[in-house]
Length: 507
Ligand code: GLN
Image (cartoon, rainbow, N blue to C red; front, side, top):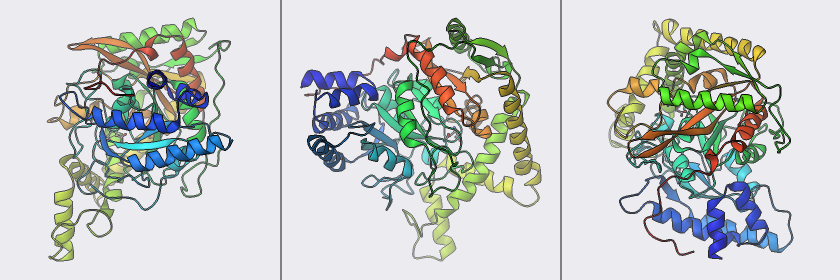
């Protein structure tokens, strides 16, 4: 049994499911082992601070039900027995949805998000919520009201954000799969910083019902895993129209384009553009890793083509106007009346609302609300918000034009490897600039994958680098196929971080 469990933790979700179906362990034993590890990972000097809440009772109940189903001969779902961590902005029965905020700290949603429900219906077992930047606003996890998460590759560094906890949990091998959300890169960038795979689907491909809104025209629920084939498996369950989210597209779920050893990249045109691969602030070592990955794609049969994306230079400014505007409107609902915490309840309504928001929101959230309210206000909206929408449209048109010349576009996921905790906290603009390479796909609504493409030397050991693969809207399966063929032809997937549990886990 101990051996079987060790084997589970060494593999990805596909391997996890296969081992359980082969009867190597019961789901209950596997889930108990996950729960024991989750508890230990938060102890001692090596604590990751990746977990915000654990639903041990719910996970055990679910595991027992899956074992019973199996004993009764019921057909197992595609995610049979796979434990998942959820970003704390996804509503799920049994787990508080704090959004990394004091304002919602113990708030429990009365319903389950569609994305979570679809995983559960496929046999997955939600075990915990992961730490995050408050309401998804941040690129390092440091804006969480519950303290920063540490990167398993170097505990002095950020795992990225805002899906900091889910990414660290997958990278540390504590769960094989997690759901995050990606508004401007919050799944892709932590995936890159943690050496795992993360995917932002085409906008509208996955339901946002039950995802606490940040920037509604940008937000997508997005999976994190140890392999691209796991992302494909997850997407095939997660995606597809939902009558509870009017912005979902009337499309069937994403079907993986089967990638086996006979499949090559013959004829695939890989676009590379100077705006994303030679931009200011790009670490030369990161660029070298991505260039080497493009060479590898060419060896696998792809053709490199040069494309242009002139407006990419304005993507950060555009994103921060649009996202802040939408956030200021979305976060107006946190008024001390409907959800979570209330302060100054004995005073007038206006005073109560002000006191609740003053005490409940952190600094970055307040900054975004102020910025968003300003860019939407009369007299300023034309100069800021409306102008940003124009640039957003232009960027989308440029991407459409680029995709006339190439099938996928390849770029680094982030300009640098994981930066040190504290490095950017006093300089919000430096933090925003770190999103320069992920926000273009968000603004355009196109799918984008981050897949590990090598390592660079950090002061405390190697740090992972991520490569992005962007595809046209609805070509999610294409981005995943290219990423999967690259992954299978490169050695990075099997590299594990040096982080280890503080003490032996009895299996
Ligand atoms: N770092 C970006 C922001 O702070 C993206 C966050 C996200 O994708 N949720 O807005």
